[in-house]
Length: 210
Image (cartoon, rainbow, N blue to C red; front, side, top):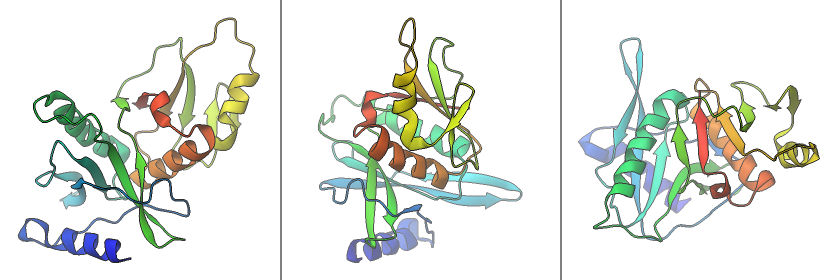
């Protein structure tokens, strides 16, 4: 709770003006503690009828672990371009690069009452359609289940269903997320995937946002 309070204070007074981030919540903790980190904020901002993903990267140090604190109300289509921008910046800076530095999304563990984190260091985002040779797992806005081929299944059954199919040639398994889903919904999927599909999402390094 002390860590959470500190984060909220930092958010409220960052850049000399009052701003806050409403973090996603989950009842699962993937990673609980991160050392040597610096924060990146993406705030929810309204300009007239438009919603803006307002990026604040002033405290981001290339050689540290990066924690992305992103407002849960933002749609994925606004969040991911900002995340891509920061990923490219870190990957391109060879002079200050630290091979051990990771990237994490932050969220609030509603049970443990602490901040928690889900890693995404080696994920490459693409805002385009995947190759037709891939086997797509589609995460649609507002649905509790996911689509695989012409079937709708629970997230926990993705690998079981994939391995049950008799392919002539085993395709690559790729995740496609609805660009209109909220960031909060996306993080909930990421947490479930990390726990039930694979303990390391870096094994599926490309995610498509459509």
